[in-house]
Length: 133
Image 1 (cartoon, rainbow, N blue to C red):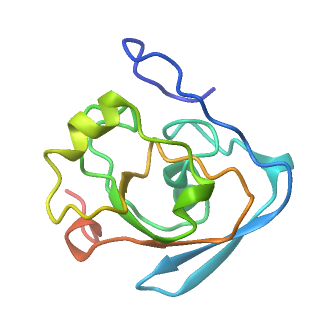
Image 2: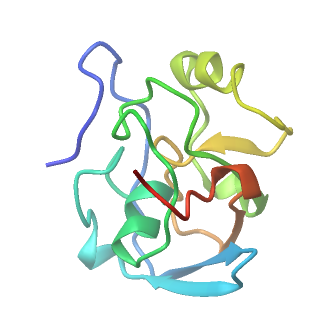
């Protein structure tokens, strides 16, 4: 079961119906996402970029556990943003606190690609937590 903030209404997300790829930068790692395997765990919304990344061993910091209560999982969707759900008010409020905000910025825990296009996601350097206490 996916972890979600109980105070936030469910977003209008569509899980993919076809396989698609996510390319994670800067490590240049390509993941093929099979919709039959989603969701992988309890990291953000079902089918979220965070859930996919963590399942495949790609570390994305997420201090709140993926419930849209912080901005630590901030990523930049460089390609394929139109295939992702629209950010809701709660996500936009959290993004206001994100460092290095761009027009393509999203919270990995809330951004769910619908599989209609391959996407490219950049994990900013300040978000790659290589050493955890």
